[in-house]
Image 1: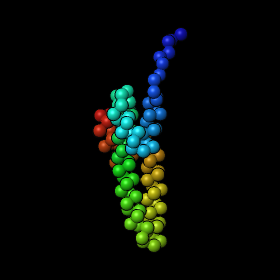
Image 2 (image 1 turned 90 degrees about the vertical axis):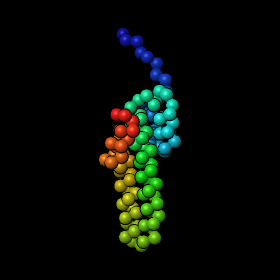
Image 3 (image 1 turned 180 degrees about the horizontal axis):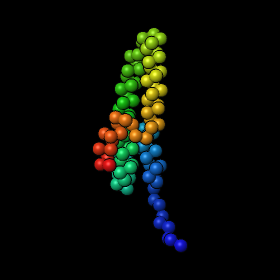
Image 4 (image 1 turned 120 degrees about the vertical axis):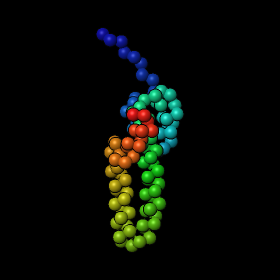
Length: 105
């Protein structure tokens, strides 16, 4: 029977998922070993940071759009829903390749 190796810390998939909660765990995973040695965790951390920057831009745009009655409100709702859908996708179309380049994947 093969000997099991003890696992210390989070698994790769758990750390990758936690990186999307806010930018704080993403930055921690980029700095702290052994997480910064994993290309997958680095990729998801960078993608989370870039997605956070996009979310700030969408938030500012939403504030402006809320002053426009009806059409601005509808566009604002569509922006928020599309950002949520993009957040669920694992490799985001424009941000994903940039994150892969930063992670060295």
